[in-house]
Length: 209
Image 1 (cartoon, helix red, strand yellow):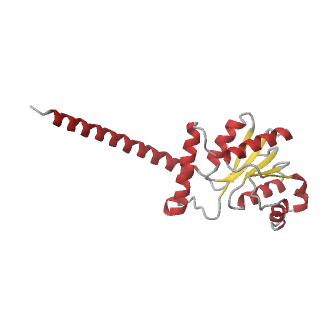
Image 2 (tube, one colour):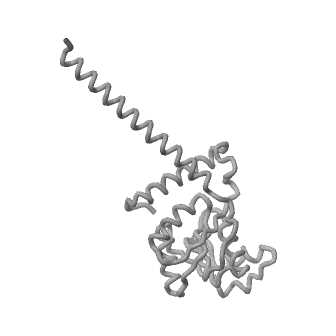
Image 3 (tube, rainbow, N blue to C red):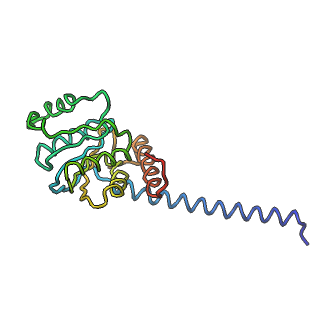
């Protein structure tokens, strides 16, 4: 015959074992889907169709803006929006990037570049993009942002602009290695952080930029 205390301890052990199993299972699922997320990221797209306009979500690397300028110069869109421009970046700063790029007539782009200083996060980027597209009557856009940011940016854009045709043009910052991401602690930490942000947005919870 067992004592009451023994039954309580056994029940507690069983509960902890169950919780441990659930936590292990949840972590395994997190890991599996993170690997799928990381492996699905592309450094550059294979093909991007023509669109009405091009939108760049800015970041710390100028490669996003340079890519947007290249697409505009190539005639992939009629107009370019750089959303979330830093306060110390003027129109001349952006145009100066084009002037330093080979085979681009910077002056020919002067008429067709718009800068958005109001957006400070991804949600604001999408809101400013939707407003800009509505003002100009654009129904198709090429979206330029970093490879790891593209899934979350696209998800937010789909919610804000459900009827707009969107094409992704991911770019790879110089300090990010997608080929062997698991071998580079900095890249892996960046991808884990972005994956968790993506999951948060996917959950539909409010309050995340």
